[in-house]
Image 1: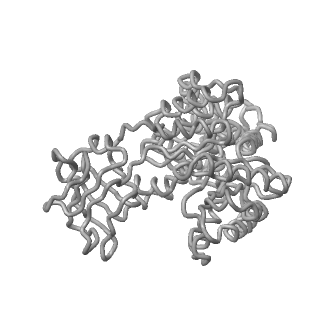
Image 2 (image 1 turned 45 degrees about the vertical axis):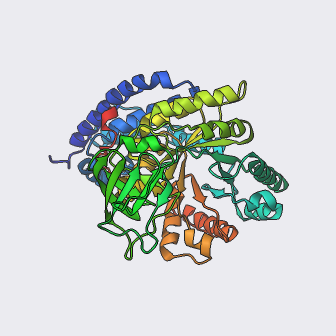
Image 3 (image 1 turned 90 degrees about the horizontal axis):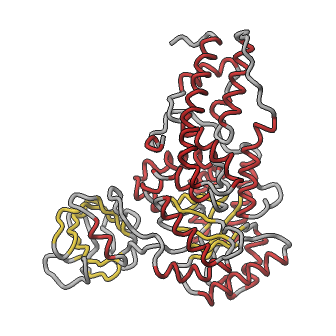
Amino acid sequence: MERNDPKTLLSEMREVRRHVVDEGEALLARWQPMIRREAFGASARNLAHYLAFRQLDLRPLQAALAPWGLASLSRKEGRVLPSLNSIIANLEVFSRSNEETERPSVEDFQRGTEALAENTAAIFGPALGDRRTRILVTLSRRAGKDLDFVRGLVRAGMDAARVNCAHDGPDVWSAMIANVRQAAGEADRACPVLMDLQGPKIRTQTVLARKDRNVQPGDRILLTFGEPEEDEDYAFQASCATPSVFRQVGNGATVSIKDGLIRGRVEAVEPEGLVVEVTRTPPGGQAFVEEKGINFPDTELDVLPLTDPDLDALDFVAVNADIVGYSFVQRPEDVALLQRELDKRRPGLPPMPIVAKIETKLAFANLPELIVQAAGANPFAVMIARGDLAVEIGYERLSEIQEEILWLCEAAHVPVIWATQVLESLVKRGMPSRGEFTDAAMAERAECVMLNKGRYIEEGITVLDNVLRRMETHRIKRSAQLRPLAAWDAVI
């Protein structure tokens, strides 16, 4: 199609807008039962319009608009209809059309950015000076014993603190929170506390393994339905902390253990368990030990995301934390379950902010509905859990999927936490890699960046604060090339 004529471009843009409005409003109507918080209404509409917009392959149109100075098509996540109307209004002038589309105001264009900033502040507190991106820090046990240590974290630039409920218990958690509150109060700053529920433990439990060598390609591992027993046919065996998971896995399924360091496939389902043929390990093999994560990337697991330990922890979290982190959330029904449990424990209190960890294929595929269910009732943010997510979708796809999550959340005006191994070498060993600095710089596109605990955590916060401040003078968010996104076609 010849696209040099502004009248042709105008016709195409009007058709794009018609598609966005018709399909987007139909999707929004299906979402309405989940939207109970009035503040999220406009954001839900923009998200619906964005999903309809990204059904289309807009790259040729995008290229044709650029010579006319109409480049905003690639920066419209937070303001879909104002962006389309602005381009159409300009094309009407260029083509001397008799029709006049109302030109969006400055306020129309800024409304999405302001909503995202307000939602970020509602969860993570006010921005620290001129740095927009918040820094979330995972606390070690030392934070409950050493007030000066926590003061150093706050002084370095920690905006929010994370407590991992997979470790310790209420006494240690209380001490950590008390020190965070005191250190933040002394600095006259807010420092919200996020408590992260551990979720179902899909990891090795009891392990039997050869003492003389590691697991190597060609070995067979037995993932047992019960407890491992000595068997000369299976030198490597392990049970699971959530045993019902193994019974959902079929022949031929892909298996990943310890963040993909051991990979294989199920070659047989036997009465005693899953027989896994190992296809890949690091050179020299990989130790087979307890308490290591197990993933089944191409298997849709039906696992209750709130375990009994999670419910016990939630009794404490609901009244002591500022934010609750939700692990292994995959479906809107999972979010609704947490919302009901929080309501039971917080009668008469405002809805508690929720952070959903996106760590499985199914969670990614269901992300639009997860957002609407959660943000429709609670302040809400998304954590890109890059470790588990990379294992689930493949490392080669991680960057692409990460971008799509950022785009979708910006369309919904939902803040994003960029997590997993940020400045890991610096925080743990005091010596960063060049690649880590590139990653940290890219993290500016999220609203929050998470650092894990380590010996050099205070230095890590200081360095990250510096990198983020520098990057924010060069860009806020990013421009995108608009190829179609197929991941959420099913929701339209």
